[in-house]
Length: 538
Picture 1 (cartoon, rainbow, N blue to C red):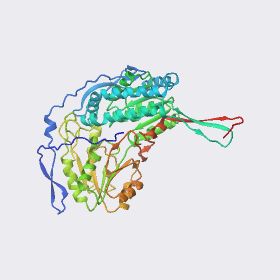
Picture 2 (cartoon, rainbow, N blue to C red):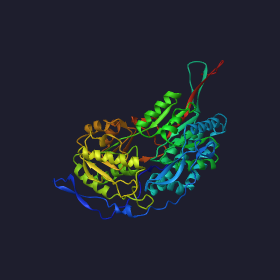
Picture 3 (cartoon, one colour):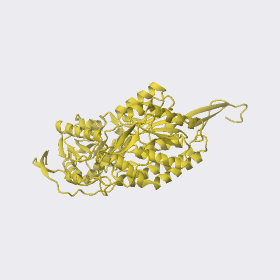
Picture 4 (tube, helix red, strand yellow):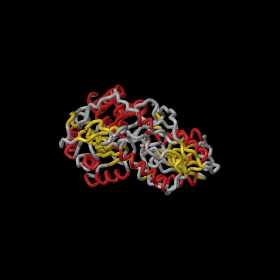
């Protein structure tokens, strides 16, 4: 299968002239460094590009039908380029979650989905993948409009990866089976791998369709039914995709989509007594609440994919130009709104100064603007809350004594755009080195040797991912085994494949998504023991 690097995208220099000023940063010679700020007039004077798609579905999808929220309430989903309303979406609440869970329960207990052959389930998932592929342009446009990510990123990378993942799990559907187990005595012992039942799933706003596939793909392949709650910031694409699933032949009630807010719809799903399994992707703090609600209700098993503060380690032998480009992609991809972003850039002291200069130049050359425009690398942040949080983090970095090399402010005068920002002289105790910023902010730290960088990298409550850039195999092996994280990328970053498991250590979550490992999240193992009379062999 083709392995995709999620951040392999088109890059263009941002060539508009920019006003300059003297920063607090120092060059090698100790002289004040001249910093060129971004020209914000480009965004200010350009009219936003009209998205090449219309919003067709704004209701909840329950039991195969589009329905209004029981309360009749709606909420606005906003265009992050302008802050203007795209559409008003049905606001699901407790009663709507109850309706969706009831539909999923009936579809599991009485419906055809878990009772049809695994091969037929596989064929329906494959038909859906084909439809998804045919509608790539529309779904990618909805993702960009709702989320702010570059259209090229969504259309050329993320939706194809979503299609690939559903095809991967379609292939697994008829290969899930138990074992025959030898026992000490005259017994025939077999294990059955049974679908767990109704799966509740809560997905985030940063990769709506990819997270939809990571959750729904393995759940349906195992024969379960699903109630999925979309993020209130990005509700458009998942319900569009779910409609395509029904066109592919998915029985009613098997996949239900509820849009709404975490404290209401999300909490109702997490605490529901008829939900047999829960999967959540989001912040660590919210993950704690979800886990508590699940444990206080029916002790449903929970998988969590949570936050990160991933180290990207540039070793002494690194090719600095390549390391700069890779580390830039690792942190700035998707506007920095990535749980595994390489947001702590550790650079060996022998190449540190050169690296800082080139990282600053690369950030200043990053193309920022309307995400529907060809060649744009960075669009707006998802909403005003995230926008303001990132600016607070940047102010914290300045106040704590880190050197602001470039960026540090909003980009333009409209929407939620932020300048690509680079800090040097970052220390471990600073908030920007400890807390998940979830924005286009690179923190560069200096280290002396491997023992030091291992200790500092692991000194975090998170353990989601790490990057290593070195030509030395021994160094790569030493670091990859010492780092307490779920994924280590060596001389690459953000390489995702349907077969590669993903998940974290420590407070980055528990369980794994993607690959064979995710199937166990949606299966129960039953042992069946039968006494044998006068067996010919044991």
